[in-house]
Amino acid sequence: MFKNLIHIQLILFVILFNSVAQAQNKVSVDEIKNKMEWFADAKLGIFIHYGIYSVNGIDESWSFYNKKIGYKDYMKQLNGFTASKYNPKDWADLIKESGAKYAVMTTKHHDGVALWNSKYGSLNVAKKTPAKTDLLKPFYEALRERGIKVGAYFSLIDWSNANYPGFLKDSSKYQMKKEPVRWEKYLTFMNGQLDEIARQYNPDLWWFDGDWEHSAEEWNSPEIRKKLLTYNHNAIINGRLQGYGDYDTPEQNFPVSRPGYKWWELCMTINDNWGFQPQDKNFKTSYQIISIFTDVVSYGGNLLLDIGPKADGTLPEEEVNVLKELGAWNKKNGEGIFNTLAGLPQGHYYGASTISKDSTAVYLFVPAKTSAPVLLKGLKNKIKTITILGSNIPVAYKIVGKISWSSVPGLLYIDIPEIQQDKYMSVIKIEVEGKLDLYRGKGGFLTN
Ligand code: GLC
Image (cartoon, rainbow, N blue to C red; front, side, top):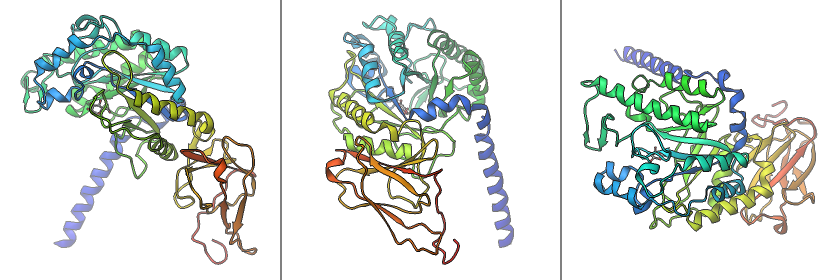
């Protein structure tokens, strides 16, 4: 009996495991390898949540959905959305300065307010707010002029649309199964908007959101993917299309083990909210942002760091400050970040690291004010030189515990003089002879 139970459990586990694996394989890695190259090299993107929710400074869309504010009052914010000091060139300059290689703007959040002059419905900033204009076009142009890739966040959910079933947390407009034609109408509307964005702005990256409200079949995810790739076969699609995206998108929470897809991106706010909220002063420090960023890159991912502009289009000064500090750090240390590969496997170094694409250099990230020597284990190569980025003076190191008759490498201790340390995070560059060769054994007596 007991044995049978275990057997059944095992079969269930295998079925479950296979279906997860199949879901992940809907988009094959080979199909997308080439187009993902710029994304894998980019490491840093800036996320922008710009919308009418910045007028009152409340949660984007969720505030009415969760009944913190009535829907009518939420929509009154349309009248205060002026974008009067909106200067997309300044935004693009700041993004460039931060070192980011792409930017993702909310073209439409779950509240259904489009940031371009859509001909599908009239709920957009050009028709319904004092901003009176398409906010996407000048921003996307400014990005492209500066060589920054263009990303379009698009909410599949549209809680304002009459033909979208969902509305408030405890009530919906209709039941899809009872009114399939109405759902079809919504899909026509939604696809119309996607066509507009594709034709008018040709995004390099689509950042879908809200897929959790319906299945891939209901959204018709394969068709959406096919269509967008017909417009631009190099377009990258994030992993929120019910299994039909190209990369994983953990949100706010730092993954402790590497996400399942080959490519991934952590989206994260600088304070605690996506959009502008004046009372939220819980800003992460520049050090925290830099350490999160280096950790993400060490794990082979990208950081999509969010900013929330005010209704007039200006940016909170704390966010500007963080982006500038990050930019200055990237300028000095970017060699260890951009165009690198994920870092050393666990066990070699207690901290973030990256490896150069040609495998001849390892970069170790060391938090400021470290007085003890840095330790690296298991490096088989001979060392050419060790420097700290931002200075060309070689630093001292010592290999200890190397036994002459054993192939197991010794422990490498590196000194980083205080005067050469970065105020946030120093980057040690270890150049090696030949291609990086790591010892992964258990410290065995003779051979391994
Ligand atoms: C969540 C939220 C949304 C936010 C997004 C950013 O999905 O629904 O408000 O825009 O995360 O990742």
